[in-house]
Length: 174
Image 1 (spheres, helix red, strand yellow):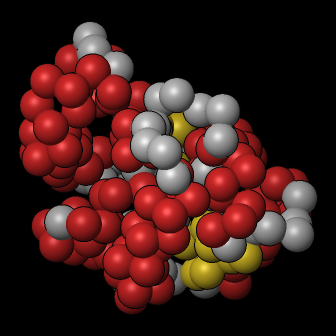
Image 2 (cartoon, one colour):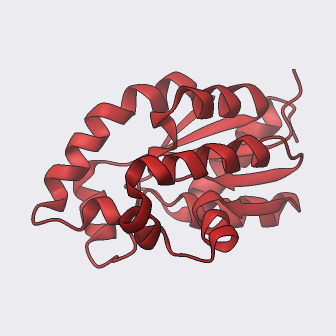
Image 3 (tube, rainbow, N blue to C red):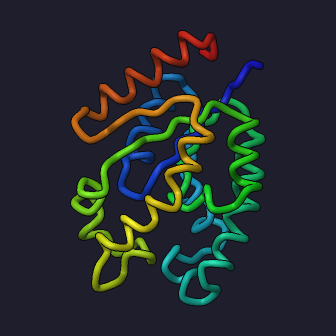
């Protein structure tokens, strides 16, 4: 099967948007961040959507956007960390493109997200505990659907991009 699009999954703070932009640039593909797409379509920030509709309302919106975006060709899609919570999303990602799981230890995620106010699930007294619980729940799904797993902690963004491109070439995807 020829997979033309690349989908980046992983926890918040793993670098999906940063890596995705660079991969898209190298391949001359369109880059899309699913969270930004939801914000653009609703005219509201992710935290505002969570406040008004709750996580369930946000996940409904996310599912519709993922279904649409994964049908596009030659796109690099950075997904939200919780995209794997819904089976439909996992199925669309797994069957419609090449899935890269950007894996990062919880300690690194805490450092990368500690000043970010745009992550509703982390607006708590103990964001580290929340991140650890989310990773415990979500990591089996990330691993199950990944065509490629890249550990991002000790590696530069450019090295991660290079690893993705090398694998895409090996698999004759690009």
